[in-house]
Image (cartoon, rainbow, N blue to C red):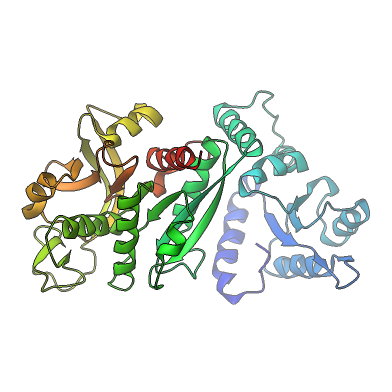
Length: 399
């Protein structure tokens, strides 16, 4: 990056210098910089880049390639000036212009000559045929370019003022929208806001994502209830599943139902500690982390989604997802929840833990939640089944 003056980066730059000394023939130094524009004339100035390269040289590294972030294509005079005062070959000064989409950047860097610059530096020949990954990426970009129509997806959380807090979830929604050649508008809804129902009436689908602590949980429960009662397509993730269970339990007559995380004196602790951790007080390193295989119920919405979008991952009716949580649906309430109509559609068989819940299609068009974090495994060219199903349901509701 272009922040070589930061003292925090010095150990890493020194490590790179030493590595380059050991692997000189196999190493290229690519320096990402930004060109500045004077206000109000909008004249481009290369002086900050020159200083950045000079500073990098003082640490013992000479850039072989410059990637210049810019808001418009570089002019020949600007490239020539940079080549003269940085010592970087003219053909290895690559413009990285502002892009309308994050996912357009690989193609735009290719057009700008980045791959050619790297290949020429290492004296390698280019492949003339794009490989499978490149072909899938190009197909995804075609879908993104041809997107028509907009779905509005509400995201109910307590960290919505920080735009990066739910970044993986937001990108997973975008991947699903691209799959269906749709544009998506993310509607951030503060779980602590009073009267949040007014926002819920203006969206096409709802996601309740993960989180910790009791703040905002009653708002999330209100949102889940609205989705359940109004047929609004719903996806719950981690805490979102737990709040859906609490809401369903309360509606089924278990007054005061709650998670032990928020109310240790709850009459109906439908969500409780991971079995065996009831006495743990020091929480470090005790979460359920990593990948776990889940058995999906035959005929369930969950199983049909995975079979449709990722059939290669379904093995004997089971799939694998990543986890990061501390609380589980209380096994003592499994039977009562099912009797009331909740489908426990995915289970961790070894410990009888709930991984997926849903409502039957005869009751709700799309109501599903998982204890896992499916957003971690969503990709631009391979939307995750749960998000793809949500966007499809939202599209159907809208039309």
